[in-house]
Image (spheres, rainbow, N blue to C red):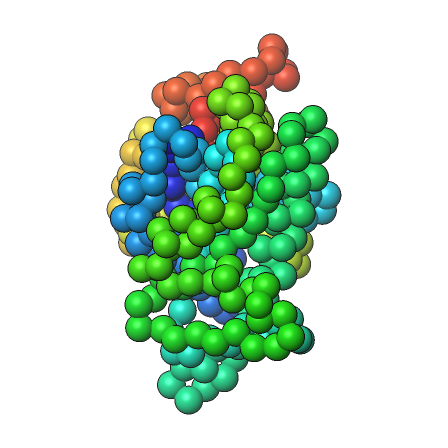
Length: 324
C-alpha cells in the first residue's frame, strides 16, 4: 500500500530554488549545481524501481517514499522505507555509471567511470545510520522491536560493482542490481518470519513518519554555508530569470526583457517556502516580493488558496502541502 507517494525530493526542490536565487559567481554555485545533477540522476533511479514496487503484495507492504526526518541538527533522508508486520526495510538507490566498489574495511565508496576514479560518501554507513534511526524511533514511540534492515539498490543496468574487505559477508547480501530487487525482498521475508507489528501499529507508525516529514532547509543551507543575505529577494522573471520584477498595471513587469506576467509571484512564493519559512505574513510577502500595497499582497495571497492561521497582525498563510 502506497502511504507516501513519490514526488520530486524536497532536497532537489531546495537546490533548484537556491540556484534560481544565488548569483552565478557565488562561491558555492557550482558545487550546488553538481549536487543537483547527482540528485536528478538518483531521482531517475528511484523512479525506475517503481516497476518492481508494484509487484509487492499490496496489503502486506506499506511504502513511503522520500522521507526527510529531523535528527537534531541533521536530516535523515530515506529514499524509500518499506514496512511490514515482520520487518522494516530502508532502501537507498544509486543510479551511477561505471564500476562501483564498496570498501568495507575503510568505509569507502568508489566509482571508476571513463578512466576517472572518484570517492563518494559510503552508502552502507549511511544506510546503517538510517537503520539505527528507525530502530530508535520505534522504541521511542513504544512500538514492538521489529527488525530493521537495509538494502542498497544499483539502478543503472550497465553498472558493475564489487564488495571488498572483511565485512563482505555482511554487506554483500544487502547490495543488489535493480533486476534482483524482488529476489532480495524474498530473502528478507525468509529471514524475518515473526509478525510483530499489527495492522494498527503499521498505520500508526506510517502516520507518525508522514507527520514528522519536514522540509530539510536548515540542513541544506548549513551544508553549503548559505546565509539568508546571500539570497536576493524579489519576484523573478520566468522568461529571462531577471529579478526583481516590478508590479505594474496588476501584472509583473520585467525591465530586462520587457515582458509581463500575471503569476510570476507563484514561483517566488514557492522559493520562500522552500528557503525561508513554511508560513508567510502579508508584511513578509510585501518585503520579499517588493510590493508596496498591503491590499495587493492580500489579494494575491488569498488567490493562492492557502491555509490561514492566526488573527490580526499574527495572520499568516501556508501551503496545504510541500511541494506546492
